[in-house]
Structure formats: C-alpha cells, structure tokens
Image (cartoon, rainbow, N blue to C red; front, side, top):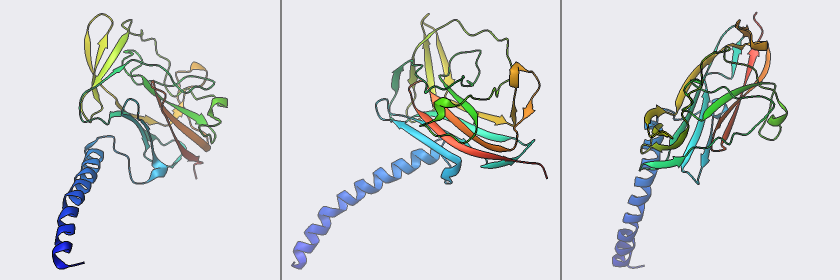
Length: 221
C-alpha cells in the first residue's frame, strides 16, 4: 500500500474510532454517575436489564458475610437507561415464591419493587420453593387507596413521576437502602438476629426482573 493510500485509510478510521470512544465513555459515565452503579465485586452486586422498557434493576450488598448480631446493607434500584423520558405503565408481575416481598415504604404503594431474604442458598431456578423471612416489623399503616397508572422516568435516572388514577402526580425515587440484621418471625415485633448459615437476597420489580445475591452469617466467636 502506498503512503497516500495509507493516509486515506487512516483518515477513514479516525471517525469510527472516535464514535466507539464516545459511546464507551457515555456508557461508563452513566454507570458511574448513576447513584446505584454496581460495585466492581460481582459477588456483592447483580443487575438485570429489561430491553423492552429500557430499565435496569440493580441490587448490591455491603458484605458477603457478617457476624450474627451485625447488619448487612442492601441497595435496590430501578434505573432508566434511556437518555430521554421513559413513560411506563404500572405493572406488578413479580417472580413468586411461598411468601411475600418486603416493599420500601409499604404504606404509600408508590414503588413496585421489593426484596426478599431466603434462608438457604437459592437460584432463580429453585427460589419458588423457598419461604422468605419477615424482614420488616409488622405495620398497621394503611395502604394508599390511590392506584398508580403510569410512571414517567427522568432521563438516565432512578427518579420518576407517578401518575395516579385520580390525576394526581407524585415524585418518587426508585432507589432504596435497607439495613438488615434479622427477621420478625410469627409477626413478632421483636427482632431476631439471623442465625448462622447461608442466605439469599432476591431483588425484584413489578416488570418481572429479578436479581439474586448471597451472604453468610457467621457465629459469634
């Protein structure tokens, strides 16, 4: 190849390289600017992308093992991956098992996402056989009677506007941090620490996505 031909080929490649770099930088920038961006350690984080709605469910835990009596932090979020507003119909299609999820702010009914802690080591294939622990204390709070029709997510964000069936609007954030150290068996108001053993954290949203992480509780020395 002659020198002029090499120069022409090189010049043609420059725009392609620039586009690739810009796209890569954009993806990285979104992930690191996103408050729910996952940590590098994949044992502590999991995510699931819904390509139909262009949203991502992410779950992260602070530790893969804790000593009985200590707490583990769980972060759950639904993020809009689109660079523009994302209008979505309300949905409540959760992967199920023998029990219920614990929902953030259960009294307001605005966030169709939740977590469950299963005693034992489970995967998406067999978690339907599990019974989740009651990780929230019994509450007498009334559930909001207003039904949500749609959510309008802001661009590349966990924030959204919830539109009710009465025409009202409520700003919500699909990001929640929970600190867990035990459960409330039998609807008890007294916290019982997690016993030593293996546990599974299941994150889920109303659009059918699920994430799964594991941690171990060690006995006190």
